[in-house]
Length: 316
Image (cartoon, rainbow, N blue to C red; front, top):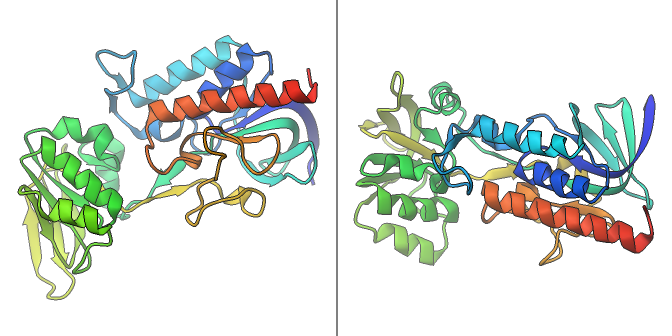
């Protein structure tokens, strides 16, 4: 039972590039947005070290510093930013109910969802050590491949994303090992053909990663053949995991239209969902690009859509 009920004009759930951009636009439009930052304040970028592909940072920026800049800009325009995690929603009526940490109930005229997505990892302690230290493990080749140009790297995964990222890395790196647990790729025929016909991609079939090596930086990975048990060490300086992402949308199941993997379906060309007054932005609805700059763009769209929705409803 909620102890506190509060009514707001615009509620933003999540605090990555999409959430903060939505907050900046919503606040400047006098929507007086309230943001709950969620279980990972700042989103995936807070676990990223160097960001070199976001416009406006000519010498690059650390991910956490970049998100602090976003937060400061949203606060400058009086966004009410709060710690808290949305645990349940009720979208049955014209006023949308969102429950925060089981004890606060927010009634919102508009809701902007910016809950993001989380990369799936293998779960190896050595993988997590290097991921958290920013020392050679990544889930985004487009984001981090540049740092490994002229080097040898490995990538895990057999789907379209893995095949696409392997061919992207092959343009930058001297050698790309593509580690596949089965004896075939799950990727589409076109992507299979592209990966298998790229000269500097070596596909390591029937194999799983058992260890990521290196003290301060990755210097190799050991793979095990699942059929023979044979171990093989690959000398690489980068290790990419491309086994998928999970959108953080579980609380919206049964309310919003989701695709088969849980991404929110938005009306093409907008941020509108199937529920009036509820808008989706960022990686919670984008399984294709998954970049900070595209997330920020959809955050802008969501705020503009929310503003127009409220104006049409005569809510001031």
